[in-house]
Length: 317
Image 1 (cartoon, rainbow, N blue to C red):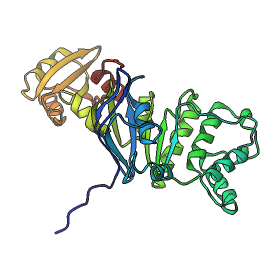
Image 2: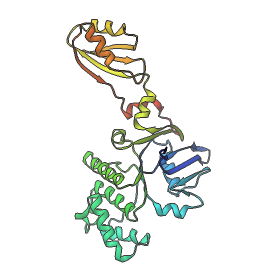
Image 3: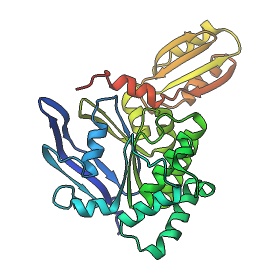
Image 4: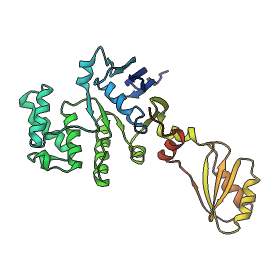
């Protein structure tokens, strides 16, 4: 008999804490990110997201606690960590008078990529982020969205296994944001592990397989995207439309023991079942047996934004 091995861990923090004077920015954060995750890091401004990413990228040292990145301790093995990660801060400097190719060649040299290989590496990362045609362009002439894609290309030059991206779609127009998210999907398909912090929760919901929510430096939730919805919803919620006799439909459903609540909303019924994993066929069967004409039955899915608003208070340090 064989057993499935647990997913290899990319990041493990244990009671990770960071203070700035009297301010507690991170409060004993215990976080696990598995290899291959596209992991959404969610929190209000001042919640501790950037502090966490800067610690994991070795730019900051923790006040207490530990963290390992791909098996390397972030303090004792800081040099090893830097070789296997790519860190893109929310604001990063670019040399506007340099050409795109020169900029990437400079960083390739910093990572000691042999000169004979750098041209191929640069071509590959530019193709990946969709900037091949801008190879000879001045960075200062690029749009904000193109500069963000160039920032992604920069952190990919040394082919890191793990990407730490702090608000990579910040300030971008809708089309540019979509393009960046598509690049992240492709990077995950290529085997990269990615942590992305963002305020655009609707986009994290579509691309991330796991998320965590932090507030005032404390972990509130970590796990699958669907798991946070299930944790917050008191019961499965469905929307119902009937052909006529809305009041009669309410009475039929209220008489069903599996139904916790029925609320008329305009010409629909919001039906909450007693359990989070309730069977919607009970709703259909109750209505049809009672003589109601069922036109529509659909599940009400709580969005990640709604979950975030429910579990957080908007507090900062």
